[in-house]
Image (tube, rainbow, N blue to C red; front, side):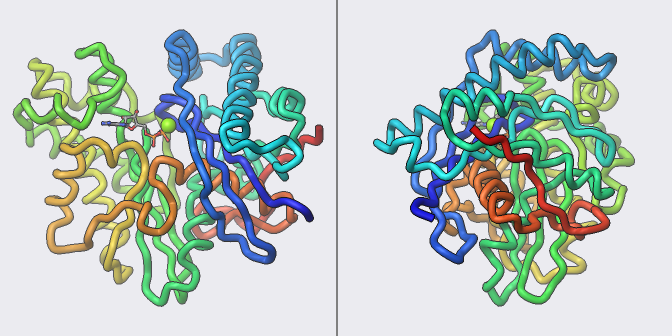
Length: 371
Ligand SMILES: Nc1ncnc2c1ncn2[C@@H]1O[C@H](COP(=O)(O)OP(=O)(O)O)[C@@H](O)[C@H]1O
Ligand SMILES: [Mg+2]
């Protein structure tokens, strides 16, 4: 094998843009070496199309719209990969494969998880073998189809003598615990940035609360937080996964509609998003595992108010650091994960972790699309 450069492509539930990572693999080693990354932000009209589809997917399946967007996104994902290849002065022959998670538009745990961004278009436009469809295999094996992050974490931290807890705060936040002598666990905690983004969009006409500044000014309504924390999802034992089908505007209306002041609303929901993380850690992680450190990644790391709440909420427990410390830039950790999943699929190695997804067996995730 002459080259082991792999491109990982992902757009998460926040649908802010396509994360593109270029990684390299050394012979006989699955540890991805991060070389470079870019984020290709979606044009506004595309964001709007995705948003409509995600909201619409709750009621019916607008298959024609899905098919159209699948093609549009296939082209955008291909262009994003080509941009990073060009930036690094590489040629298509240098790239072993492109691994694309695509854009999630629907996730019903154990039943169906739909990602779009046509793989055939990516393969054709780039001239590079493409691997996608990373969730179906796990669902077919009886699993949730999520979270997939524990596979990267178990590769990264397999030799560390201590247990490591990682936390990714994307639209949805998820947690993983891996370590030398334990069976890995992982689950979706609930809202990461999802509810915060919905409020900033609806009441402040912004995609997200930059640096958490809007949330700084309002008053926190602790009563509604107490109430919202009683939602059954937070009580459910792992393995479990969730999505924006659950943590959406309806959830906000149910628990936070009595807060009339917009500043107070954003302040409360930001605090709630941190409390949900704390509660899940205390209920399911800290009593069972000797967690000395939580390694944090995802866009939520940039929300200073959320992070400050989180540091306080986890007082006396572990230290929060960014995944950059382990060579995984927090911004690109998920794109790097898909590069690894694609690479292992190419090597025909199983790459799901049944103890985390609830699958009955180990399987090889990913579908290969040849050029
Ligand atoms: N500078 C910032 N300040 C506050 N929040 C931010 C900032 N940058 C990104 N975010 C948050 O992170 C989200 C994107 O995080 P990401 O890890 O890409 O999530 P996903 O995997 O769901 O796409 C944005 O929607 C936003 O809520
Ligand atoms: Mg994103």
